[in-house]
Image (cartoon, rainbow, N blue to C red; front, side):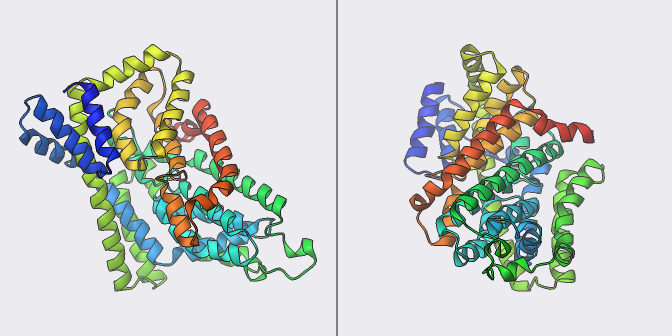
Length: 436
């Protein structure tokens, strides 16, 4: 089968709504059958794609985040965020961003961050005079931090599928500064919008009793003591990886035991029923991801056999041999892809094709991995397949089209962040280089 027919088969399957894993596997099977390759080879390649020890990090990190969420950790993190930034204009909006940043360092999942934080703060903001649409948009935009701030499931997927050696630990550390930069820019956006519309003005400036008084009474030190143990988890994970104490896969297992120790031994909020629910959610999410990865294994093998990555590389280099021009094209491509494909699936399909091209043009694969994930994270906030929008709107009881106007300032700020991360690689690479 020619590369054109292969791509057409894949796009046709996507267009009729075939699940990602089935579309990848079926298009690969069609290509193999057309080339006279026995289909038994497909099963072998799918198994080989899963026969890789670092993949065990994915279910462990998913489970640790689910256990932390079931333990009621989100309330402690929200209280700490409230104690830090709740007294400013737009306080609860700022709390939403900071809480998402804290929870992202625990969950590794964007949708989980939106659900855990949004379920508490969207109703709270609406009850205290904020526009419900603005509250929902703030939560949807903040949720993307879940896949940028480590530990991040998409970063693990990128490292395993990029087609070149990429350290998971380096990717984790490379996501720290971009994540903090995006969080600060979102906070600035929330502050400016709140100032403009008069949302969340502190009581001392209004001369009246604040509706937020029960939130503003949270004191920093007690809130910090209540949240310090959950916040130690990313420190243990990243410190252990860079200290050579354990591998990323072992770090994921440590995270599960740490979450169990907090939920059962310290807070005593993790009941057997909650553990079973966390196991069920983790199992379903893990199976979905591993099915895609196994199908992507044979898909990638067919790509290589047909020399499609080489053709793509030659096409990009023919268009431009400038790293700056290449990054501009990639940003546009990824933003468009992120609108229609789930982040993990997009990484699995595009990373093995685009990463070798980036390396040929002198772009560091760790920098390119962070850039790809940040672009696709923005796709989580854009219709028609923005998972953050769906989750946030479900919590708020709104339709997606109702909050798009409130999303515009956040889209503008996120695009600025993409440009900075693209053309200032030091933002991503400085911390890994310092730690090495």
